[in-house]
Length: 245
Ligand code: LIP
Image (cartoon, rainbow, N blue to C red; front, side, top):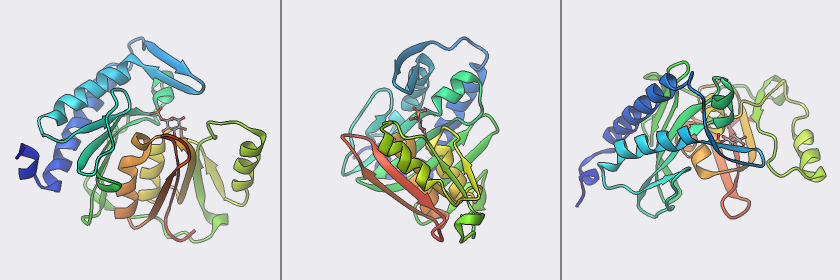
């Protein structure tokens, strides 16, 4: 039996929170340094500091015997507990000096989300949730909005990764009728915004599990709905809402 078996979910959430804060301090300190790109593919950009940050988070979490799946160094979805890490969600924003980026750490068991930690290190906003124990922003309970009509609601989204005429037209069609449309460039923060009632609906196609895994627990624990389905080998379509729209 490993050491994680002795830790309850609240303790594991504390561990993820410490790991996220350490990684956030590192990313804040490194902001003014020149950022090295190691891969650019389509719209995706990958930085050496994504890798360095994931190493840091892995080192904090690895002391426990829970397997890790991360954006930079891989891993597997498992039936038992496993961590899912996105060292920087919103890498392009971090690269260009925009503050819509965060660290995202989830604990999953199969497809069930047990813990979600999303840390925007730019403004020190720490979103946390543990299954059946509510969702919090900087330790204050949060809940989804009570806006029930689309014409009063804000949707957050991202432009589809695959750009066919059909996908672009569908995308535009789905933006009709909302009061406000926002594109933050971070799936994790978009989920956190739905969970905290700052936005009412989030929909995006073509994102990876690590982009939204922590958001699953946050949105559910804040009283919202979140659905996700695989649209190809490892990309998902995700819809999160306050449950009223
Ligand atoms: C990002 C997502 C964002 C999506 C970007 C990108 P990354 O994740 O969270 O919502 O629109 O294309 O995939 O790459 O910054 O971790």
